[in-house]
Length: 130
Image (tube, rainbow, N blue to C red; front, side, top):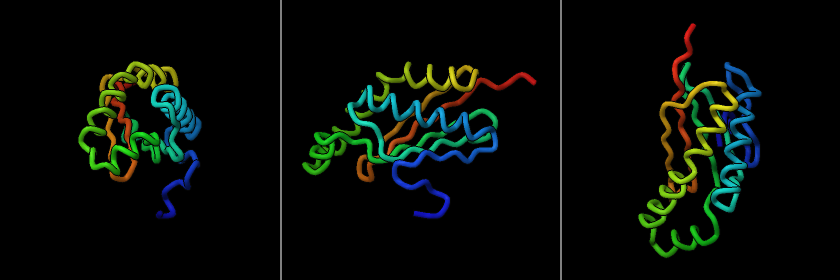
């Protein structure tokens, strides 16, 4: 792990747009994962990516049965199931980011690397009118 990565269980708070907003989004991602997937991540960090995008990366989110599926060689089936779960939780993800940022989410992408047990949630925000 590089010195720029958060430790396990640690919430990253370094962001030029405001540490508290990124920390709140990280906490919201942890809550949504726990509620929707039955298990919260052990690591999460969130960063602003330019003026209109936010990235959250979550580690160690797979449930025991999902880890068993991976060990059985069912990676594709696991990816498909996890994609369906993440799609089902999209309204909760969008609502949390919109509530915290005060901006509308116009794009949402979600993915899971089942081999390394990493997930990502990417939000594109409606541009701010200056």
